[in-house]
Image 1 (cartoon, helix red, strand yellow):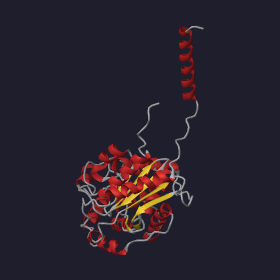
Image 2: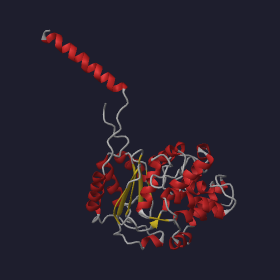
Image 3: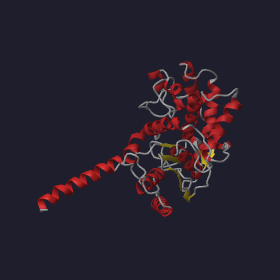
Image 4: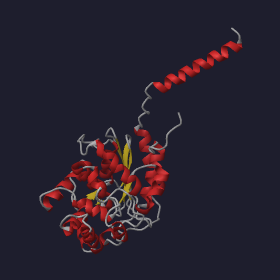
Length: 343
């Protein structure tokens, strides 16, 4: 056999092998090792611990008093491994991150159509507590993560009275976290004393029929849900529960049906970081949600949930250290679901 005969034969063999590789099931990516995860968290914490950018939210007086040096990062894998560094057991108020889990509750109990037909799932193009957006769309064409949509979504949680509704909300949060959660009463009082704008938003959503009854109750329950105390470790577990498709990977408890998780992640991707949601998604690809208490959660579907806590916020209301830390951790561990290697 001549060299000219061998080359075409070799090419045919390579082509056949490549074709077979495309047809065979692709191997699952190698599991992230404990050492890799610990190194990623430690590096991010060390890199940003001394960062002085941003300032605490002060429009809620209780949040202004939280020590700005607090900083913790936690990650929980879909197989239930927990990794932490820094101030991960320090309680802080969940704030707007609560909106994620109330939305999950309503989707579980009432389905996607209920949300689409009421507050909607679109970004408003306005600030998170805009009244202009309500007037522009008559309460529709929003999402559950801006305040008008969030208060209306809270009003959709089912229950015979306020106590029953609250029991369902706090029970859902606790199932996601894997432990009983409680309200920070100081924050709740501070917010209740200063939430006149949210009260007005609730009344306006009631006027447009998006809240069916008792807007004052809906606003109070919303204020209470934002005042629930969590830790960065809780937040990572809650995010990991979404990463698994609705099963808490630590407790193994099914919290929400998997068919509802993709909708929650979609709204997190488009509206999770206030006015900087697009920038965040562009740089990380991770569905995420922030809160003005300094928390930030992010989900790498099928891989892990990650959270960070640091009170100082940027102009958009997102924790400065938490954004940088989570972006670094995700990049180190291949968390971006859009970062697909060419085949």
